[in-house]
Image (cartoon, rainbow, N blue to C red; front, top):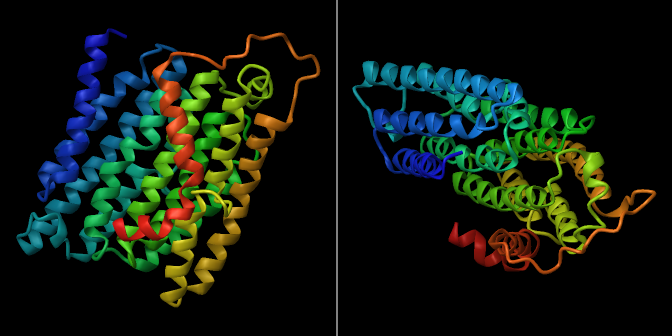
Amino acid sequence: MNPQAKLIFTISLLLGTAITTSSNHWIMAWAGLEINTLAILPLISKSHHPRAIEAATKYFLVQATASTLLLFSSMTNAWYTGQWDITQLTHPVSCLILTSAIAMKLGLVPFHFWFPEVLQGAPLTTGLLLATVMKFPPITLFFLTSHSLNPTLLTCMAILSAALGGWMGLNQTQIRKILAFSSIAHLGWMTIIISFDPKLTLLNFYIYSLMTAATFLALNSIKALKLTTLMTTWTKTPSLNAMLFLTLLSLAGLPPLTGFLPKWLIIQELTKQSMAPAATVISLLSLLGLFFYLRLAYCTTITLPPHTTNHMKQWHTNKPTHITIAILTTLSTMLLPISPLIYPLS
């Protein structure tokens, strides 16, 4: 892709995200989401592969539908209450339509169907944008309207997302699809707590973005798209594979690592809110996700091909992305000890 075009699309992405996150009027928020959608489409379809074109088409149709629902929700609320302010969403029908619109934007169950297919058709760097940056504006709208939304509906959607994200990821061999279902499961954890402690949802999203960025950049560096490819990368970049192993375990939420922090705080908050059964169910469902993370981690480090080829060890490289990966993987694995500092800051 032309560097000038790529620069324009990147600036448009940043602009759309900034407009949505900083606006308090529904029309401005909608405009920011539309700029985001139009800016990411060329980045999805830049390879001109039929699967990439299909992914871009699916993404466009789903996001356009979600934006329409969001606009319809805000107009209905304005019709009944005279308010265009995002935080003043009070009409029950508007709240229900908005929940559907944001669930469709994020890929929450039952509107999850598009996300694995789109992520599978996009390159790894674009997949990283889809899994992190593109979810930030809808999460912000979720945060601003959380006091108006139905907690029971959100809890049901969250538990279904955690269940389906874990269940559907079990049988996958494509790494991008596994990470897509992982994203759906993580969104379940963010959604279940948003009615009770919205700041905890944002903290969960930030830590999830950190770990996902580390994983995607590491996979992009070793050019691994399938589990079979991942099995042969240990001989090429042993140090990077070891850090990828730890990052995957952190995504699974194992205790000594950063990924355990949001799950621990969410379970604690749910128990305080007398929702111990919901906390128990979503904790048990996270074991499904743990299985496929362990499968990925096993393929990354423990499995060796029967005939190891003689590769030059890629220890010393001057690529700036490797410095980024080093910083992100360190943060993805070692933030738990300073959790008393992180939570008050959020």
